[in-house]
Image (cartoon, rainbow, N blue to C red; front, side, top):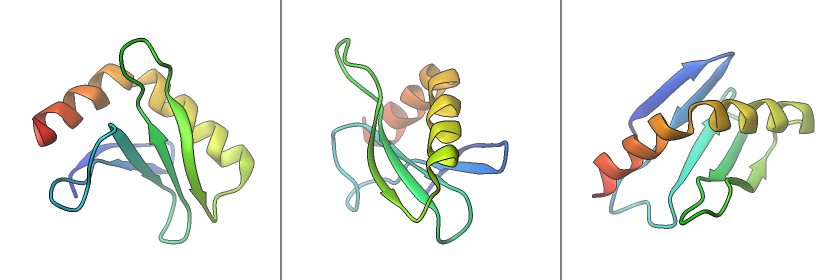
Length: 83
């Protein structure tokens, strides 16, 4: 589970095959019990929250904004891992 970014108390990870699958997405963690899964968007579709596990709404928003700010870097990491 490669860590793509650590910032603002969040850890952004891209899991690799065979466990993970398209569509492109990341797991943003804030401790072991707080995770939000964010789809990265494709072909002009915007990124969006896909699933939330134990994370407070305000932290989901912070995590989403962090992904948005680093979207190109994160998409590049997804492609490197998934081909």
